[in-house]
Length: 295
Image 1 (tube, rainbow, N blue to C red):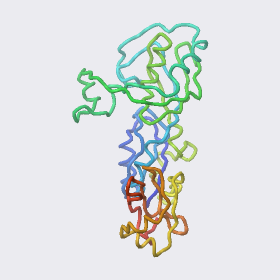
Image 2: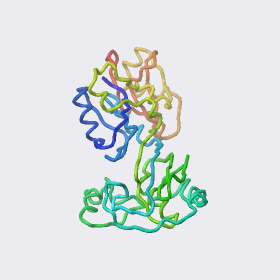
Image 3: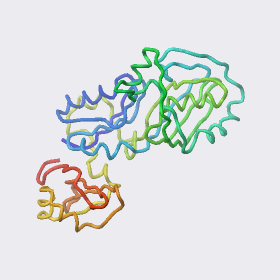
């Protein structure tokens, strides 16, 4: 059993909880792409079986989120699970200010990760330090944010929809929006609606893992990696590729340094990942499956 299974994670369980349930239910290797906080819901792609070998090629994809922001109240975690640490009046005329906020916080810019995060300092996750009241400096990260929507829902509540790059903390974005409006804020509700090529429309509820495995809509490795260049090979060539024959790769067209591609059979089934490395050229990354193995 292999492929990508897109789960619509409900609020409550951790991403690790979902992976553990998948391992037990499907009796296969599993890993998730992009952690969702327990209070958040939405798209959580699971890599199953041989698809765990391609996870690193998918984790950098852009993501889309929608949710709500509570203005006037700041929590230590930046979300509704934390303790209130500050309150500040919410200014009037929010609607007139939102365009300037979109311009200020949209596009490519730096963002400082929160203390309540899984980033580590000398091997210790920052959230463990935060729980002890310890704050350390964090290096700003380059992110890219596109506001699809940002509108007033109530006097102290905003609705938003954003597309953002890997490394963007939406909890921090909510706080930044509050600061730009002259108040404080925290993320009230969050739902991920897209992760790269995987959308909420193709997601199944977590309860689907309790049903029969064949009924689940797995996304094949080939479809998940459809953005990569593919080199179809004959049966004889694939046998050489399985043995790590570098002479076979030297016959392939050149590429830009760092490009990743797939070696496939004539039917398009992916059998190996290769990467172009200067100055030597193509090199083998992973054999995804042996010829004749069942998907």
